[in-house]
Length: 228
Ligand code: DC
Image (tube, rainbow, N blue to C red; front, side, top):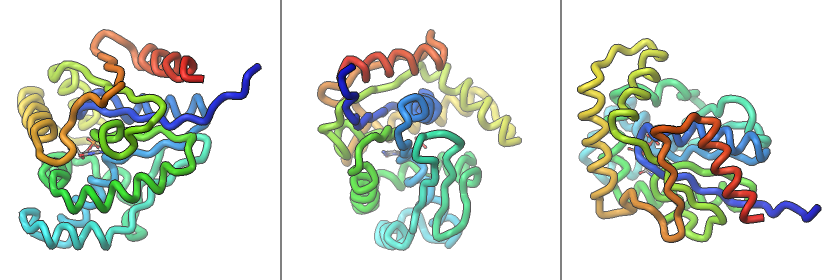
C-alpha cells in the first residue's frame, strides 16, 4: 500500500457549525494534532477581561496578546479533550462563557492581535499532521493547506447547538437571543477588514444541517483520502 502523505487540514466556518467537534474527531481518526485557533482568540479575550483592559484600546489589547503565553494541550494522537492554558492558568471552560463569546469577535478584528496569533499558529502547524479550525486558516494562515474545508450550517441550527452547549455549562439562554448574537457575530466576522470569514480558494463547502457528526467526519476523511 502506498505511504500515506502527512496532511495539513484547515477547517473554517462560522460559529456553531461544529468545527471543533468535527476537527477534533478528524484529528483523532488520523492521529493528528488538533489546534483550536478560536481558543487562542478567546484566551486573549479572557486575559483582557481579567486584567480590566479596555477592549476598545487596541494598543493595550495588543500588548495583552503579546503577554499571553497560550498553551493548547492535546495528546499528539488527537485523543482526549484539548485543554487551554494562559500564563499557566487553566481556562478550558472559562473561555466558553457568553461574555467571552460576545467580546472575542470585535477583539479578533484587531489586525495586530491577529498577526501575533497567526505567527504562533503557523509555528504550531509547521510540523504537519495537523488539523486546525478557525475562520481564516485556509485563506490567510495556511493558504497552502492540503485540505481546506468550509463547514457551515443554518443560523437556526447553530443557535440550537449553542443553546445545548450553554445548558451543559449550566448557563441559561434564550434561543432567539442566541440566534441574534450568532447572526451579529457572523456579520462582524465576515465583513471585517482583516481576514474576513469566507470560503478559501480551493475550499470545499460542507453544509452540516442535515448530516450527523459522523457523516460530516466521514465526508472530510474521504476528501483527505482522495488527497493521498
Ligand atoms: O471558533 P470560536 O467561536 O471559538 O472563535 C472565537 C472567535 O474568534 C470568533 O468570533 C472569531 C474569532 N476567530 C478568528 O477571527 N479567527 C480564527 N482563526 C479563529 C477564531
